[in-house]
Amino acid sequence: MLSLAGLTKSYGSVRALDGLSVELAGGSVGLLGPNGAGKTTLMKLLLGLLEPDGGSARILGLDPSEPHGRHELRRRVGYMPEGDCLLPGMNAVEMVTTLGRAIGLTDSDAMTRAHETLDYVGLDEQRYREMVSYSTGMKQRVKLAQALAHDPPLLLLDEPTNGLDPKGRRHMLDLVHDLSHAQGKHVILCSHQLPDVERTCDQVVVLARGRVIESGTIAALTRSEERFVGLHVAGDVAAFEAGLTAHGRVFSRSEAGELRVATLGEDADGLFALAASCGARIEGVEELRTSLEDVFLRALRSAEGTRP
Amino acid sequence: MTASTHTEIYRRLKGQLDPHPPTARLLWRARMHVAFKRKLPLLVLFVPPWISGIVFSFVVYSKFTLEQGVESPLTAGGGGPMAGAMVGAIAGQLIQVHDQIVMFTHVSRVFALLAIAWFGAGLVCEDQRAGAHLLYFSRPVSRFAYFGGHFLTIASFGAIVTVGPVLLIGLVAVFSSPEYSFLFEKWNVLLGALGYAAINVLVLSMIALGISALSSRKSYALAGVFAFVLGSDAVGAMMRATQSDSDWGMLGVMSNLRRIAEWLMSANRQMFEWNPWYSVAILGGLVLGSGVLIARRLRRLEVVA
Image 1 (cartoon, rainbow over the protein chains, first blue to last red):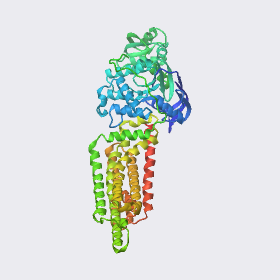
Image 2 (cartoon, each protein chain N blue to C red):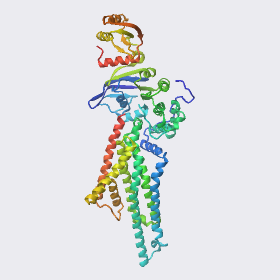
Image 3 (cartoon, chains in turn red, yellow):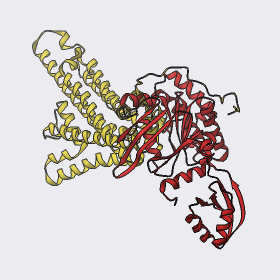
Image 4 (cartoon, chains in turn red, purple):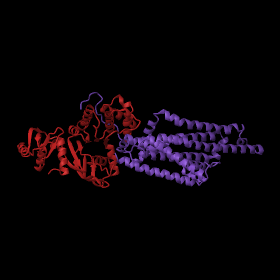
């Protein structure tokens, strides 16, 4: 589905993509990365809105840097942008119909598809209201509906759960999951919400500083050898953290003050000894499952070279 | 997912996609549809020019019918002093009708400015505010098609208030003149009036779109269009008055449009006397500048989310 080789893109002196290479067979892919990692630039390159400075990209077998490929690609991709994106002065039916026509649907097909996709996303009679009065959840659903108007094989979804309440978020994730797993769509989901990605995607690509720093199936990545324990530490915690760093342990501190420490495949005895030597004491130990968040943070640390 | 109602089921597209949809025309249709939803601006902006057009048409009609003998000199044939006097009278009528059409084009400039500013000022900036450009450009809609759709929209409104009434007056003049003499004697006035209406719409549309592309809100763009067009004329008028040189009128957009109107329609009484090609060059530069501005802005809109 997606093949990127040595893709580079710079804005002046800022290098947004730095030799980005990745191969994805298809399915549902979560695109993760901190702000400035190059996700948005990559999305634009995939749509052919930007031309790369170097390297090559093929999406669905098409080259977005070539005019014909770009034109075809935009017909085969459904893009759901981030934030509020509406056509001013229109209601949902008019918007989806207009955008359906713009992609090549006939008038009657566009109208039929508008109602079918709005039915699918669960927008009922509100579809006839002007969209300025819509809630965030309704706007997100309309955006998804317009991306589906031409029944594209690939969906690019940029932060589809932004601003949604828990119920709306669950509904949106259900839709995305259904599209990728039951309807056979390829989905590239760009999100800061790791649980959303974990729930809807089978694979992830983690970007940082314009490079792929981790990619693979979520199942494989969270099955890594590295396991974590949660430690409740009292005493000289700062000295203990310094000791962890000195011993090459990856750790992070949760908001509740719990330390998440990689065990490097050993049991926790070494950590007790280290704590004692640093004037700290471990009051509680809890084995933690490797989550996507752990994978993400580990990959980021690795990329930033903070791992001693 | 489990469907909670019978409707929440994904359905496949059964139709076909047109490989090259006429996106500019589609955008134009969509924008016109949106504009026609609100009736009050249409009423306020379209009724006065059409009433003026009807009034001018009536005046034109009355020039020919009330001052004309029952029998046309052209059909009556023969010669003599009576026929000569009637031919002279008709020539006088044609000149008066000619003046009426020129006068209407001067009036229509203001209507065109109002309609184009109102309907055009919000086009690009409101799209940008609503994020509509992202939806368009992620489809096979080129910047040129996007511009074309918006330009057609704004030009349509301009044409409704300029070309339409001019056509009406012209048709009335042609059909009420004896033996369609207006068409044969003054065809250049009709062509000039239509040509001027097109130039008027082109210039004002490009200025409105350019200012819209630079603005963040419709209200700012609206103020910008009026400030630019009327402000330039105010400065021109002030300089004309203080320097006692009518050529300073070239500073004003509307004055240049008036000069071109007088030139294209060979007006009998001309307010400005500078070389009309200067006006063509000035307005051409404005159109070109606006075009460059719009092109740069649209490229930015296409790329920057």
